[in-house]
Picture (tube, rainbow, N blue to C red):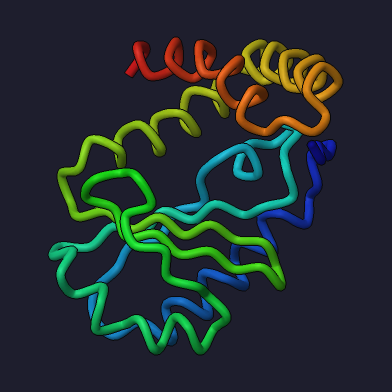
Length: 158
């Protein structure tokens, strides 16, 4: 498990990806920096998570070629109904697209908002992540499963 201290380059990396996506994407899409790299002070895997919100999820597939040209690989729903998911390896990026009204939008944006407003939660999650990364250095599934309770608590606050 590769966990890094907060990097002030992450918002800049997001901004570059955002600009590229907005230039390439045909149609209306709102983009948001989500996940741990969006929260100042929070340790994270070096992967930029981007949330895309569209009016009509069926309009994503006509954009596959444009997004693939940017280096994204299309993964389908990847286990989450209502999502179109893309990943990128050169600059590790996970791009999650949902249609307006999907409950996952509220979860992703709400997590970032709550964490940005409560530095005590950032410290708590940092401690949890570090201890789990030491406990499960090669087991991503166990690492994710054991920190799920923290994210569930945040989602209950929304």
